[in-house]
Amino acid sequence: MNHSRPGRAASLAVAAALCVLLAACQGSAPAATASASPTPTDARGVLDAYLRALVAGDCQSGRTLWSGAHTTGDGDLCGDATVSVYRIGDAATPTPTETVYATTLTTGGSRDGSVSAGQVTWFYTLDQKPDGRWLIHAGGSGP
Image (cartoon, rainbow, N blue to C red; front, side, top):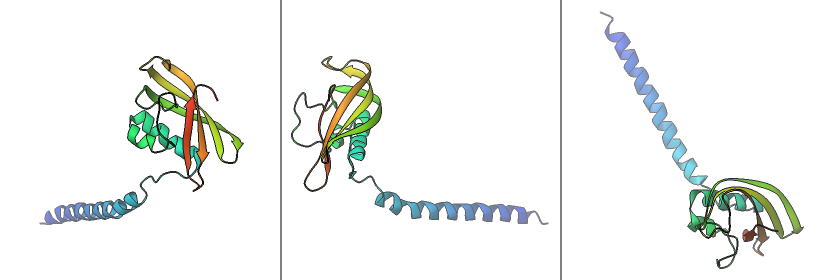
Protein backbone atom coordinates (compact mmCIF):
# COMPACT_ATOMS: atom_id res chain seq x y z
CA MET A 1 0.00 0.00 0.00
CA ASN A 2 2.82 2.37 0.78
CA HIS A 3 5.02 0.47 -1.63
CA SER A 4 4.91 3.31 -4.15
CA ARG A 5 6.35 5.84 -1.70
CA PRO A 6 9.85 4.30 -1.44
CA GLY A 7 9.96 3.94 -5.24
CA ARG A 8 8.80 7.51 -5.70
CA ALA A 9 11.30 8.80 -3.13
CA ALA A 10 14.10 6.92 -4.87
CA SER A 11 13.03 8.30 -8.25
CA LEU A 12 12.95 11.84 -6.86
CA ALA A 13 16.38 11.38 -5.29
CA VAL A 14 17.82 10.13 -8.60
CA ALA A 15 16.17 13.01 -10.50
CA ALA A 16 17.50 15.55 -8.00
CA ALA A 17 20.99 14.08 -8.21
CA LEU A 18 20.88 14.24 -12.01
CA CYS A 19 19.74 17.87 -11.91
CA VAL A 20 22.56 18.77 -9.55
CA LEU A 21 25.07 16.90 -11.70
CA LEU A 22 23.86 18.52 -14.93
CA ALA A 23 23.87 21.97 -13.36
CA ALA A 24 27.40 21.41 -12.09
CA CYS A 25 28.58 20.27 -15.51
CA GLN A 26 26.94 23.20 -17.27
CA GLY A 27 28.34 25.64 -14.74
CA SER A 28 31.85 24.27 -15.02
CA ALA A 29 32.10 24.22 -18.82
CA PRO A 30 32.47 27.99 -19.27
CA ALA A 31 34.92 28.14 -16.36
CA ALA A 32 37.08 25.43 -17.93
CA THR A 33 37.04 27.25 -21.24
CA ALA A 34 37.83 30.57 -19.62
CA SER A 35 40.70 29.09 -17.64
CA ALA A 36 42.29 27.29 -20.60
CA SER A 37 46.06 27.51 -20.31
CA PRO A 38 47.10 30.86 -21.70
CA THR A 39 50.71 31.45 -22.68
CA PRO A 40 52.64 31.77 -19.42
CA THR A 41 54.09 35.19 -18.68
CA ASP A 42 57.04 34.16 -16.49
CA ALA A 43 60.21 32.37 -17.59
CA ARG A 44 59.63 29.25 -15.50
CA GLY A 45 56.05 28.95 -16.73
CA VAL A 46 57.18 29.20 -20.36
CA LEU A 47 59.79 26.50 -19.83
CA ASP A 48 57.30 24.27 -18.03
CA ALA A 49 54.80 24.67 -20.90
CA TYR A 50 57.50 23.78 -23.44
CA LEU A 51 58.61 20.72 -21.46
CA ARG A 52 55.00 19.51 -21.10
CA ALA A 53 54.64 19.81 -24.89
CA LEU A 54 57.97 18.01 -25.36
CA VAL A 55 56.85 15.06 -23.20
CA ALA A 56 53.53 14.95 -25.09
CA GLY A 57 55.32 15.09 -28.46
CA ASP A 58 53.45 18.30 -29.34
CA CYS A 59 56.24 20.08 -31.21
CA GLN A 60 53.91 22.59 -32.82
CA SER A 61 52.78 23.97 -29.45
CA GLY A 62 56.24 23.68 -27.90
CA ARG A 63 57.92 25.65 -30.68
CA THR A 64 55.61 28.61 -30.21
CA LEU A 65 57.55 29.19 -26.97
CA TRP A 66 60.91 29.54 -28.78
CA SER A 67 62.25 32.76 -30.24
CA GLY A 68 63.52 32.85 -33.79
CA ALA A 69 63.78 30.16 -36.42
CA HIS A 70 64.48 26.58 -35.45
CA THR A 71 67.74 25.16 -36.64
CA THR A 72 69.58 21.96 -35.89
CA GLY A 73 71.62 22.42 -32.76
CA ASP A 74 69.52 25.18 -31.17
CA GLY A 75 68.64 22.88 -28.27
CA ASP A 76 65.03 22.18 -29.19
CA LEU A 77 64.75 18.44 -28.55
CA CYS A 78 61.17 18.06 -29.77
CA GLY A 79 61.04 15.60 -32.62
CA ASP A 80 64.67 14.57 -32.09
CA ALA A 81 64.62 13.01 -28.61
CA THR A 82 61.96 11.31 -26.55
CA VAL A 83 61.54 12.75 -23.08
CA SER A 84 59.34 11.05 -20.50
CA VAL A 85 60.04 13.01 -17.31
CA TYR A 86 61.51 16.41 -16.50
CA ARG A 87 62.41 18.46 -13.44
CA ILE A 88 63.15 22.18 -13.61
CA GLY A 89 65.97 23.25 -11.30
CA ASP A 90 66.80 26.63 -9.86
CA ALA A 91 67.28 29.62 -12.13
CA ALA A 92 70.40 31.64 -12.78
CA THR A 93 69.77 35.21 -13.90
CA PRO A 94 72.83 36.63 -15.68
CA THR A 95 70.85 39.78 -16.61
CA PRO A 96 67.34 41.02 -15.73
CA THR A 97 66.15 39.87 -19.19
CA GLU A 98 67.94 36.50 -19.31
CA THR A 99 67.28 33.41 -17.22
CA VAL A 100 68.99 30.02 -17.43
CA TYR A 101 67.50 26.84 -15.98
CA ALA A 102 69.24 23.53 -15.46
CA THR A 103 66.67 20.82 -16.08
CA THR A 104 66.90 17.11 -15.50
CA LEU A 105 65.39 15.16 -18.38
CA THR A 106 64.77 11.44 -18.57
CA THR A 107 65.17 10.56 -22.23
CA GLY A 108 64.98 7.58 -24.51
CA GLY A 109 67.89 9.11 -26.40
CA SER A 110 67.94 11.08 -29.63
CA ARG A 111 67.72 9.89 -33.21
CA ASP A 112 71.28 10.97 -33.98
CA GLY A 113 72.74 9.68 -30.72
CA SER A 114 73.82 13.10 -29.47
CA VAL A 115 71.54 12.79 -26.42
CA SER A 116 71.98 9.54 -24.54
CA ALA A 117 69.17 7.54 -22.99
CA GLY A 118 68.65 8.01 -19.25
CA GLN A 119 68.90 11.13 -17.11
CA VAL A 120 70.64 14.13 -18.64
CA THR A 121 71.06 17.74 -17.55
CA TRP A 122 69.83 20.15 -20.20
CA PHE A 123 70.20 23.90 -19.86
CA TYR A 124 67.56 26.25 -21.28
CA THR A 125 68.18 29.97 -21.77
CA LEU A 126 65.14 32.22 -21.86
CA ASP A 127 65.12 35.87 -22.91
CA GLN A 128 62.54 38.50 -22.06
CA LYS A 129 61.41 40.33 -25.19
CA PRO A 130 60.71 44.10 -25.26
CA ASP A 131 56.96 43.37 -25.08
CA GLY A 132 57.54 41.50 -21.79
CA ARG A 133 57.12 37.95 -23.13
CA TRP A 134 59.64 35.30 -22.13
CA LEU A 135 60.75 32.92 -24.88
CA ILE A 136 63.27 30.11 -25.00
CA HIS A 137 66.39 31.22 -26.84
CA ALA A 138 68.60 28.12 -26.64
CA GLY A 139 69.08 24.76 -25.01
CA GLY A 140 71.96 22.38 -24.62
CA SER A 141 74.11 20.21 -22.44
CA GLY A 142 76.25 23.13 -21.27
CA PRO A 143 75.31 26.62 -20.08
